[in-house]
Figure 1: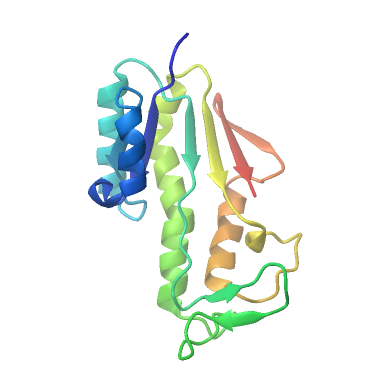
Figure 2: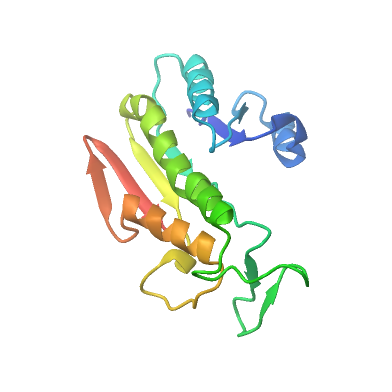
Length: 182
């Protein structure tokens, strides 16, 4: 039986105590790689590290699961109509009154980051037998759900991520299967 190799990425592996704990029991199978989705060089360095470990093997699955909601965004209680701000002094992040820097950061991390990661890791995916890229999104970014105008920066960025690949469809990029999940 062949064991899978798992690459977990994070901005600061030394501070990722839960991952480090998992690594202790999966020394030969789990590799923790430094990667900041907002930094193209970091993504290239991570891909090189993964390539070095895989050798001639390919990467079967790439799961884009990173995302941010800025501290100025709202916390929405999903099972009630109660909406409250994270702190008393922070404003609502709603369309047309949101912070442009918050929107820009959300777009960069939640849309541009996954697009860059997919592009940079594509050669490793193409070498595998499975060839799957999954982008994780949320219903807050869905046009089919009326989530109101809360967490606008996050919602807009996740709607844009959904446009990379429709969550209900599989998209083929060459011979690579790309799928979105909500």
